[in-house]
Image 1 (tube, rainbow, N blue to C red):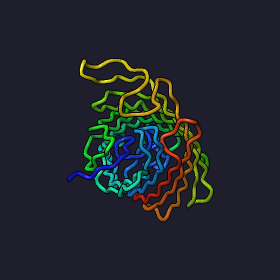
Image 2 (image 1 turned 135 degrees about the vertical axis):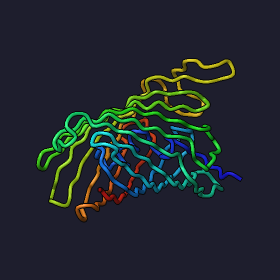
Image 3 (image 1 turned 90 degrees about the vertical axis):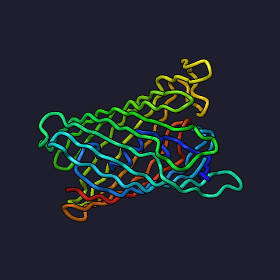
Image 4 (image 1 turned 45 degrees about the horizontal axis):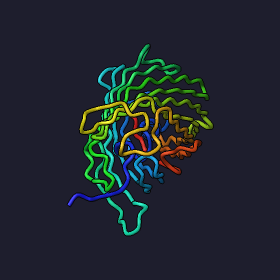
Length: 272
């Protein structure tokens, strides 16, 4: 029997695509050769899929350089869902797999300023079936990222346009984020970022075909056109050696409409 659970938000994650990107990279959007283990926890709200839950995930991810400019990566999440309903039991399984490609513009050896074009593709591989199940979800998310770093300060900006497809229809969002970081000591750094997710377009699928639906799809809540969610992300990094580093982060929503009540993640990374 396939495990059943009540909540599902972005594929393989409890938050939005932009939040997942910040969490998996440790708020460092510039691509780099690495292997990482990232743990995540989020307490979700009822808005995304009408069911609240606590979700934990452990992801194994890696990024490899094919050339000095071109990078490819993959993220494999293992998830645990604890539903916020009487009589429910925690459900564990595999989430939706994410593949990534990145291309550095300009001089790939420039450590001060980097422009990056990217594309994330999430495919439906999850083994948990949700009681309010949205069906198989595909997500295609182009991105543009900019990073400028000085000796101690770093600023970055990123814009994603996630296109998410499920049996109930297709939705397009705009997800900008900006942040800044400071190198406190040679081994310790901290950064803050603010991101938004804005619903741009929604198409609903039904017996009579596909139609434009400004109020959102049948399997989601509070997703009308223009609906905006804003959240903050605080990340700290501790360098253990030239190769190894650990990072920890916390997330909080700032707006009335929100996908999660709070979130946290911890990761360990090896760069090569």
